[in-house]
Picture 1 (cartoon, rainbow, N blue to C red):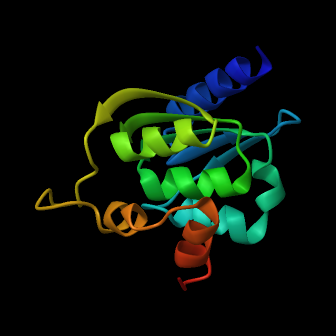
Picture 2: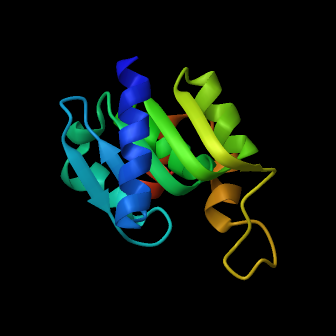
Amino acid sequence: MVCKRMIENAKRLLHREDCSCAVVSADGAELILNGQGLAPVIDLLRENPELLRGAAAADKVIGRAAAMLLAYGGVSSIWGDIMSRPALDFLRESNIEASYGTLVPVLMNRVGSGQCPMEAKAAALDSAEEAYRAFVLGSN
């Protein structure tokens, strides 16, 4: 029940603040993140990764890369206004509670001409640790 309340709070925060990503930490602290793509999550993993441990995260768009990075951070639940099927599959395999507004087969790039490059890169990765090395540390 605590997890459900936390994700509902994160969703409300996401929509009320019209931010990119909202996190409700295990101790109830609320965090608003803004930026494009993976940048807010990457910044949080670099600066305050402990805030993600046991937290609930709500984001406007959750693709496989974001799902993997949030899993690396230790979140307990994730909401995506839009979530890709690869993200949902990864979260379920990782035993992380996942919910969404709209499920899409794959995330498209910003101009809609093909697959999102981060989604494509994440498709080749097998673990949250690999995603952390690839997206946060910048190496495979």
